[in-house]
Image (cartoon, helix red, strand yellow):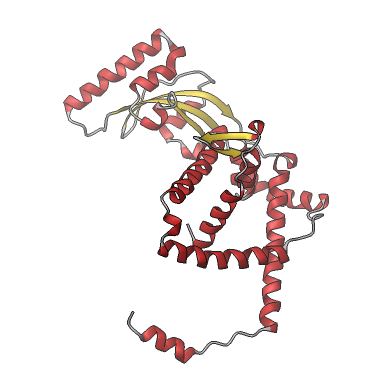
Length: 296
């Protein structure tokens, strides 16, 4: 993390010392919490396409909340161990404070008026951004994965086949217990911990061999085992979503935030140009060259 971002994070998290009201709490880790407002702030910081995709995908939203909580845990740990008091850290924070202060001042003098953007400006920007906002066809998938590399020794291949047969037998006897079977038998630990769920994947993110089967699978249906280079995959379709473009209402807040950020950036550049015009910068190039020539 860059120094300015480090200090801004430190200040931002410290400033939110008051716990959100219980109804506003989205996630907790110990006595630390993340509020709905903080999640919205994080969404607004993303680009439009990522923001729209994240806002419509519970798995991605959950990942965002987890990232915020991990950041808070790290901050708390750093403060508890006195890391912020170390001379090297203090020097970094001092430099970061200067950077953060100048950035904050530049933001304040560059902020567009509260009335910006207008409804017509929002509509124009939405029409121009439509191609980038399009969300491709996607599926919410779960899997049971049995590791069996194609070049594995015969003994390992036999063990994998036995594990695969056990999974198929259990699924045939009780298809509704897929999450339990995945948690017990799947060898991809991340999805197994969630009952096999992978989350939402776009067409381009799915292996061609699996993608070819999805068109014939309805929600809650299972694929036959698919052999890939890494092993066997039994895929379950939890949900499917046709390609769509979010409406203006769905992206209004993110679009307005992005337009305000763009206008603020333009204002910043104009402000800096005026500042440098009034205070021309002069650099002693000879002294600078001599400094660079010296050994540390």
